[in-house]
Image 1: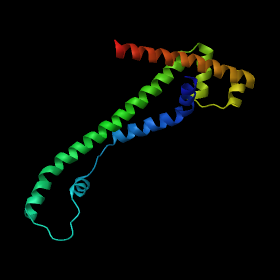
Image 2 (image 1 turned 60 degrees about the vertical axis):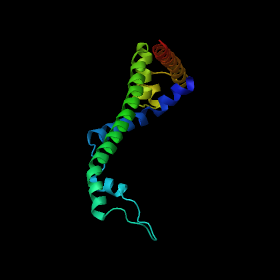
Image 3 (image 1 turned 60 degrees about the horizontal axis):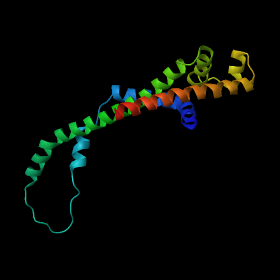
Image 4 (image 1 turned 135 degrees about the horizontal axis):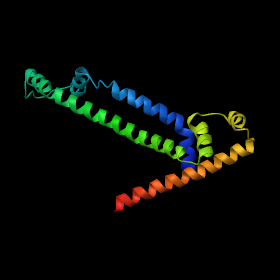
Length: 163
């Protein structure tokens, strides 16, 4: 579990950035254009002899009738995928932030500065008037406490899924 929490702590800035990027994409979603859908529906022209079973106008009419439905389907599925990614990432970020806030006061402030504010160890030493060894000890203690909270969340999820 410790590796999981440590990876989350290191990945936190990137996770927040990706979440914000997904939120921007969702807020400004345009989807694929009609031209892109029509181009994707067109098949390459076959070389050699072939029997023509329908006229060009029938093919054009068929494409014209189905492209809007296809465009709507592609855009809906794309938007839903972006939304799903955003929700999963947001849930992880919000849980990590709330878990940090739920730590005992001094440890909470320290871990918030370390993870969320992304302060360096040197800055933490100066701010809290502690040694580098104590920074390391606080970090380890914070990770242990966060592990407990993540394990509890996992147990609650399993209980819900099995119950």
